[in-house]
Length: 618
Ligand code: AGP
Image 1 (cartoon, rainbow, N blue to C red):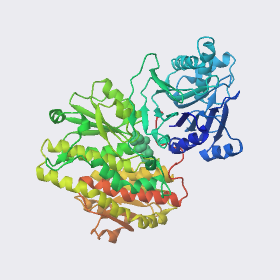
Image 2: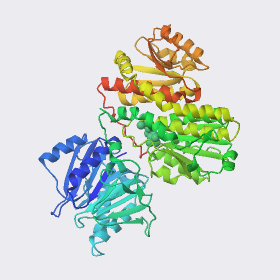
Image 3: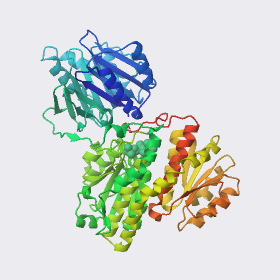
Image 4: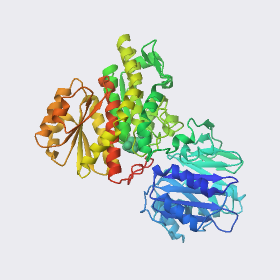
């Protein structure tokens, strides 16, 4: 959940490192720091608590020069966000610096041992312990080779003593122009430039400098100079790797004319939804084409149970997927929160197919769920946005979302891309079983119509902004929906709570009478997702119950359903579509409602407090 950027080349490293950290601020923004080597007799170390701009301002008055450096933006795990706890951390000698993404679980006994050996620590972090351990191992290698080989050996020895997850970058004053990186459980990518090379925890940090990337695997150790690199296994020996061409441009990771990435990504959804189904629709078969599943038609027909795993928004998309697959393909499907799946011993037989759903492809609990299922011999497929991410690479196959980089911490386009992909999967499986040609064609037609229908909803942004501004003092909100839109209610509530910090909860509408209605009051608005479907009348009854208790109601409903204006305080109309695809439209007003509400409250929409874009620590 932290951001790492390393550079070794011929240019001044500081602006490159700061630009990279800026692109990774969604991964953690408690503090930031850089360390450079410039041929002097000390490491140039600058680090500040708070946002990256604090460090940037500090560097104006106290610049750091050098063409080799490492940097870090932090999401605090051990120790509060202070200058001392900010990365990079140095070893006892002050000649070695390192940055870390992950958690060292056995840092306390290691720290105690080094204290007994006379080490003194400046911070409360687990990271500093590993810096000291690597430094101690480096000193123990004295006389055994060049500084570079000693540093590689020291990193190996130190990492062999720790338990936990790490993505690290290390450098030593004795070895100017030389960086060492290693990963276990936390992402790390190498960027290959011309007379310069990069290390980063995500390719978006370096895409403006190179589109050639190597996504490291767990247990990889890499070392870089300006003109060369090598990748080995942490236990020794060579490691396989491949150089990938990054599929998106630097502009895709830029804010453009938008005030926030979240709004940009909400407005990108007509395109990102289209990207999710482009080239994957078969008119001839009235079905979908998902070659990345790596399963033959007969293998797909043998599937008699599906498990969908995810966290947060990905879990909500999985819930929609459950309704989609059971409705269109009649295959028993269940959804699991990844962190639950990995610890429960779910009985799975050989014809059960497990899907792991993740925008980042690095969520540690979803990765652990994947590994747990594979450990038991099950095929696991990934529905992932980040190409080359760990989940994508460790899956037996899968489907990329092609949504482009999602920078805003609040997931938006990744949700609609995940649901679109799950709709394609359900269509494919359904057309292999009992869905008719005509039914398949109807679904294809509606999928193709989605981008324009989303565009139409996006024109309501100002209308939704005005609605949001009516409730800025509310203590919380209730979100209610049925069937396909019960997950939509959960997703709408998550958006609201995570960026505006008010209480918001999602429920199946009929649950109102089972306790939820106790929360209804004049100050607590209820947001109903009530499209014109088979359960509209039931939702209207629920709305009446809320109104009878003076609860304000915001209703999302289908165009033409004007009776809603009789009972709801605010109505947001969405175009008609198939019931099974309605979450893709109903969620857009909820995204906009939470966005405008949070902005009006002065919240930091793209970097909400306590959160990070990719949860790579448990
Ligand atoms: C959703 O807005 C949050 N950012 C969070 O719940 C997120 O969906 C979750 O952490 C899963 O992330 P992933 O899709 O990258 O695995």
